Image (cartoon, rainbow, N blue to C red; front, side):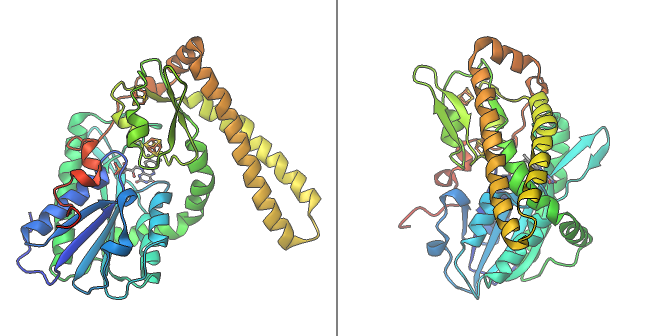
Length: 374
Ligand SMILES: Cc1cc2nc3c(=O)[nH]c(=O)nc-3n(C[C@H](O)[C@H](O)[C@H](O)COP(=O)(O)O)c2cc1C
Ligand code: SF4
Ligand code: SF4
């Protein structure tokens, strides 16, 4: 571990967002390093934060923002949080993104954070913060819609490689250094520029579509843990006697509910995703595109605005309507069994950062949080 002999800062505030605990864990590592250097630390999940009060304009404060990468950009809730931050002229700031690494045999395949660090850094700069660095850190990929949770030894190996990087990063910043000109940051910048359009499409279409692909299998005992612990409050429990989780558009697929459900009951039906998305929704949206082009050909600006708004509304309605059928099918015992046995998530193992509990992801539980009035 890189010890910090002297720091000019008087306080470290870490705002984090985390689905399955990876980003939380990196924030804890930084908090521990800062505490060793004698610095008071506050570790605050963004959904419980009040930056207008917590962030005083003080050159002796260092504030860090930590989040996962979703579609090569920060999750929408983190972007909203950054957009709404109070303007500060003196506060030093940094952004650290975790990204999803996979391990196949001896081969480690790194993730890619791209705009997660660079676009977020741009927002912070526009808000007046004095940026001291960005960093992306590989943690085990948690995208259980796509792949099974990795083997415990792979998870351990990935985490063991990342901790020293985080320690080096935070030590450099606490000692008054900067973290800009690294090969990794340069690669992330390049991909940030190239993939920015992909990230925008992800935020508009990918995120919204993916919020409507979950269902609970018959192991669900209606405990409500998923709804209670969702950072976006995206799950509604539907039904009187045995309520079942219903996913709303607020969901940003952080994977917390899927990773922490005590019954391992949350599934995604991949055949539904593929068939509906590629064979029904996309051809439908393409046809719609053609119709609209015929309706508003002569007034380009009006066409663009009306078209974009209508198109998006129709898209959301189509996703909603299909989800009502999908959710309805999951409530019928035979339908639920069919969905459960024809999806890969049923055999996938679940991932969550091994040291992190649901309780840890709440502000009141962290030893780094200063309780009100102290
Ligand atoms: C919906 C979704 C999208 C993701 N997109 C990316 C990505 O674009 N690049 C990447 O490297 N990792 C991606 N990941 C992996 C996560 O960023 C990574 O596992 C992260 O460490 C999870 O952190 P958390 O446990 O704090 O949420 C994605 C994961 C999910 C669930
Ligand atoms: S899906 Fe899991 S966490 Fe949610 S109510 Fe059912 S058993 Fe509980
Ligand atoms: S519903 Fe689940 S995946 Fe979606 S934001 Fe909430 S905890 Fe995350």
